[in-house]
Image (cartoon, rainbow, N blue to C red):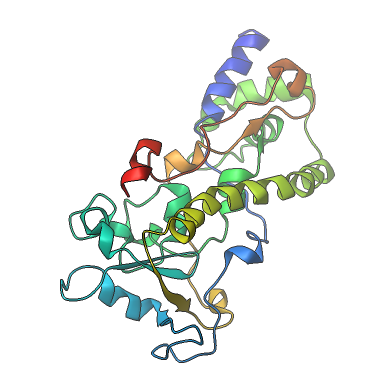
Length: 267
């Protein structure tokens, strides 16, 4: 198999490769919220009412006598005016009665665990670039992820690594550190457009904040892995000599979002 063919096969396989490496740090602290010492049933100084995640569930639309609430990034909104969208049977009814911030970014909501406020790991899973030379090196060493299509290309990967080289651990670390600021910014942008939609739209009044204990993440279960469609949005680059071969960075998918653009005026 010629070099160009091998690269093409590896490139196609890598497009479906799931993010397998994880970094210790998560998204910026500004994306975590709900840290308040006030009682959950007491109005705050602005006259708003804060609720715990458990209390928020009572406003999921199952009781038609109650208003309909949802939260994003720790802020609760009254979306009763959009009951057709957010109420039971509505296209976005899965967002009601909860803070599903993670799902607004990932578009993953097929399972209950995806509908969470927990943003840990999203920088790595969706926004931190993946490098072709690293993926090929891992495949050549038999360390491709369990859900990676590169596992069947071990022999071909070895040939490519022999020709184009492999990145050192130091280089991998350097890339992560250099790429992280931009990745975090892209995550904030993906979330920020929906935070702004509710905060500045004027259609849905602010109710209050979601109350969570300080350090909740220390006892929380690990957040769910992102779904396949979200993994495809992670950018991919060549790395080393492969940058020249690939000519330019490859982008897996577009910007993360939840609702189609032509839906937004209706929500």
